[in-house]
Each structure stands twice: as C-alpha cells, then as structure tokens.
Length: 312
Ligand code: AKB
Image (tube, rainbow, N blue to C red; front, top):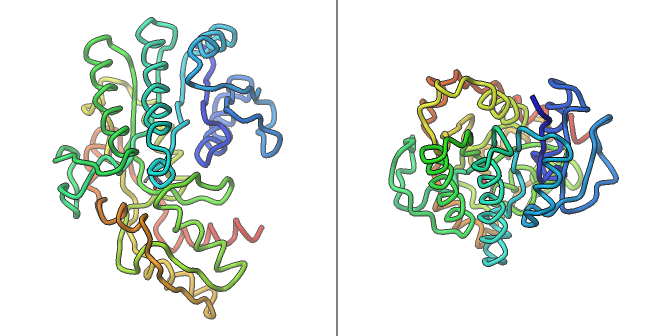
C-alpha cells in the first residue's frame, strides 16, 4: 500500500483531513500538497509540498517520488468565488480532476476521493428530501463543474475501472481553518461575529434553509467511504450526504441561547440567490444503506463545538 496525497491541504477540509489520515495511518504515510507553501497549522510528521494540480508533469513526479496510491483531490473554487472567476474556476475544477483521473486510468494511482457538492442541484431539483437521482440543472459555475465532474467520475469507473469515490458535501461547519468563498460560509462567519462583535449581518435571508454538516462528521464520512469495500457502493458518481438543515434565523436562535445579547440583521446579496437554487433538505438514504452513514452532530452540538473551539 502506498502513501496518501491530499491536494488542497491548507483548505478548510484539507487541514482536518490530514490530521485524521495521520492519526489513522501514521504521519509518514501522508503527503500534504497545496499551491501555497504552508508555514502554520501543520500536522506533525506530515511532509508538506507545493503543487499546482494543473501541472500534470509535477503531479506525476510527486506520485512516483512518494509512492502515492491514494489521492484526495480537494483543490477547487467554491460557489461564490467561482461566480467571479468563471474561466479559472472551470479550469481548476475540471482540469484538476482530469489530471488525477487520467493518472488513475494509467494505473499510477489506485484510489481517488473527489468531493462533489449539493451545488449539483439547481432550481428545478426538488427542494425537500432531494433524492439521489433527480433533475440536475445547476445554475452556478461551481455546480456545473461538480455535476460534470460526477459524470466523468462515473464514466472513468465504468469504462476504465478507476476507483473514484465521492460525496455531495453539504455546507461544512468548522473553525480550524477558514472556508474559501462558498455560499454556506455564513454558517461559520456567524459564530466569529457573535463571539467577537455580538452582531452579524447575514448575506443569506433569514428563512433560507440549507443542508449542513459539522466537520467531524464530514471527515468521518470521507474516511468511511474510502474504506468501504467497493462492491458495497451502488452509486458510482457521488453520494448525497446529509446531517442537519437550518436557516440563519434558526442558527441565530441557537447562538442566542449562549449569547443572549447577540443581534442579527439580514442583507441578502448574490449568494442568497445561489442558496435559493439549492435544496433545503437532502435524502441521503443511499449513503445510510450502502455504507452505514450516520451523522452525530445536531445543531445544538455543532453550536457548542463551534463556540468552544473558537474561544479556545
Ligand atoms: C459552497 O457553499 O460553495 C460549498 C458547497 C456547499 O459546496 N460550501
């Protein structure tokens, strides 16, 4: 068994995924790669390198040099920021994926994790209990790239036997590393604002509900899907993954239980339109049935973890 390469290692998910991989497999089994060189927040014993996932030659060199067998491709441009950098978002989100899929097709890598997102859904998808298979007409560049990526993952699996596994992440809530330009980022910002200023101006309207998951659950889901026997997986594109759903008013009320003085105001911007195009509640029964997915963190537990984590 070779080593594990995490691409996008200094991003919100990367930082915590590396910690978990290092804990489970040993730090010397993990290579952390990012386009930026990392100076802080490193996991002890893990080797950090700089890498642009669009540079296929360097990618190949690293895979050979470090005897990599598994790649976690987390480098991507998220929904809000992608709307402002359409071409770059498409190139990064698609070409990065193709580089990794092709290396697996050529048998240089054994297994891939590639995250998709609830952004694959669009205004014509059912909003409540959104099924695994339904109309996918995303209206954002990010959503279009994730939907296309899912099709390519399935294609490479069926046509070339590439073992690529994927989850449609909801908004991920965490405090160790900041999120990078998504629509669901409000659900993280709100905690920092409550603790530091007692006030938050939300760019999402108060009644707009979105699916979310606490980071610890998201990491566990990622570890689980990567370790399950391939034959148990009945979805070859990407699994719906759900945990909790709430709107800004509901999370603000939960925060007020800890900070009674906390005030919230609503100034919806273009990100609210993105949120309105996404589902409110996802049906993830395929993940629950196929590999036993179960979330542990409800809104209350998530709120407590966030507040304690940020304060510490
Ligand atoms: C975003 O808001 O863009 C991401 C996502 C839901 O994929 N957090």
